[in-house]
Image 1 (cartoon, one colour):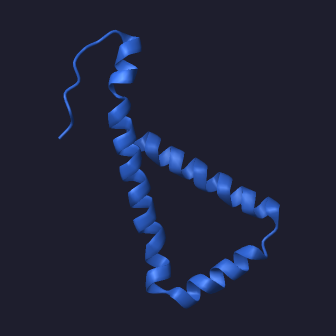
Image 2 (image 1 turned 180 degrees about the vertical axis):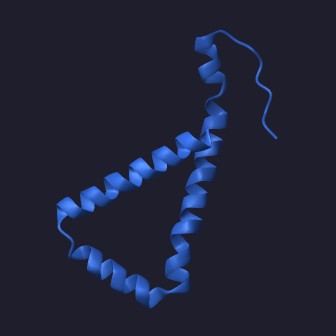
Image 3 (image 1 turned 135 degrees about the vertical axis):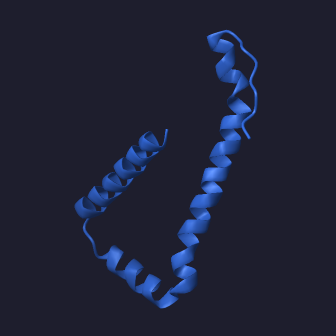
Amino acid sequence: MGQVIEKRPAGEQIWANWPIMWEELGRALCLMLVLEGIVPFLYPQRWRRLVTQLANINDHQLRYMGLFSMLLGAGLLYLMN
């Protein structure tokens, strides 16, 4: 359940939510680590081959993949809220 936050002026409300934001960020990072660890745990040989293949991709392609990943994540967050 969400925490009830008392009404404050706009500038003070940001600081009142600060601990809650850090807690949510910590949860998100923990979930990311769990999800990132699934493939290496279940398929270590495939993971090693994938990392080797990623090392051979040029910078432009790698940046494009990173941009696509960030945009997809931001888009999904927008849809969820």
